[in-house]
Amino acid sequence: MTAPSTAEQPWPVRTVARKIAEWIARLGSVWVEGEVTQISNRPNTSTAFITLRDPSANFSVTVTCATALLRSLDTPLTEGARVIMHGRPVFYEGRGTISLRVDEIRAVGIGELLARIERLRRLLAAEGLFEPGRKRKPPFLPQCVGLITGRASAAERDVLTNAKHRWPAVHFRVINVAVQGHLAVPQVLEALSTLASDPEVDVIVIARGGGSVEDLLPFSDEALCRAVAACRTPVLSAIGHEPDTPLLDHVADLRCSTPTDAGKRVVPDVAEETTRIGQLRDRARRALHGWVDREHRLLAQLRSRPVLSDPFGPLQRRMEDVHALLERARRATLSRLGHEQSRLDGVKARLTTLGPAATLARGYAVVQRVADGAPDGVLRSVADAPPGTLLRVRVVDGAVHAIVPEDTDAVNGGSGGVAGP
Image (cartoon, rainbow, N blue to C red; front, top):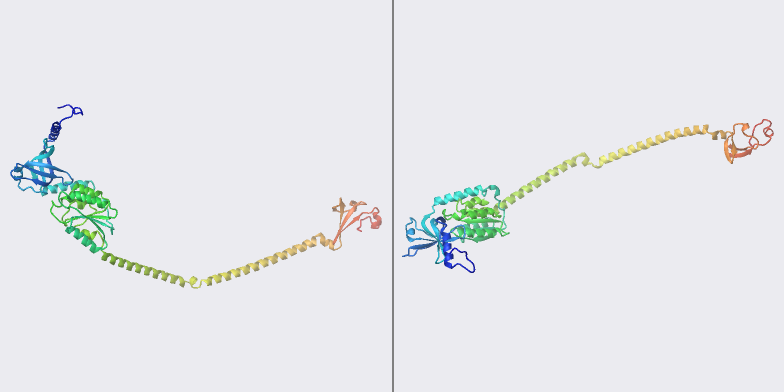
């Protein structure tokens, strides 16, 4: 049946199942790596059923193989083993299920695991995830410490005991997870996300005790390493013992050799800090006393100077100088005023002597013609005063008016002059 399916002409279930089987068969043979989580090998059966799980994600596939294949393995296949299988996917049309039919099973050796971790290490290093510049410094005294570790494990006890011994007031938020096996990576990732989203958690510690290379594989998982690198909260790695160096140690912001070391490095020692505070107080006290003594000596030196020992003396002397200068200025001013007064008196005397008032005081008079009621020049000649001319005669103490008579000879005694009345 090649015609497309429609609502009027639907395909039967067998056709859909057959087409799915054809598409799956096109994939061909593949190599698959995973972790064995379940084995069903019943006696007197020719087929064994295995569940193969991805150790880094929540995915699994059903595997079928001949029981003779399991018996031919040098090392018996157990749950939790890391294996590589060769087979092809098969769709069972009758049940509508997919399984991987394998014909070869290889156990992943330590060498292969280490080589794979080394390749991943080079990849992450090339991406810059190991660079010291991107690592954040953990806080000096965290408000809350997030701890990811196994339930009731020695690692949890070591971290809590050592941290509380160093700083009794430290607060922990502990999340227990699986630290090996196929559940380790998903649970650690979930716990890391939970603690990173908690605003009260200032630093996160991922701790696990020692173990074999296979036991520590989850802490070299690529997904976990990238999650720790992307975490905004500083992360401390405390995995295994001193020689153990999973990739998480390179990605974390701070590597601790053991969980005990993590408990010592996540918080300061209260005794050491108390001693340091005491030392700083002593240094501050000595520095303050030294500064006060130095300033006191400086003030004493300043006070011993003449200008400060007798501050009013210079002012008094300057005041006396000012008074002396004022007296000199007053005398100079009076002398100058006297001199100028004498000069003024001399000028005044000369002006008085030369002025008309002095002449009038000696008996002389000034005769002026009067025209239109106002003086009109000084009379200098008899010819300038015909009879009937109105005259103004100025003497020392005032002025009188006169009129030139008709008979000037009678008045002047035949002299022909003009006399005042």
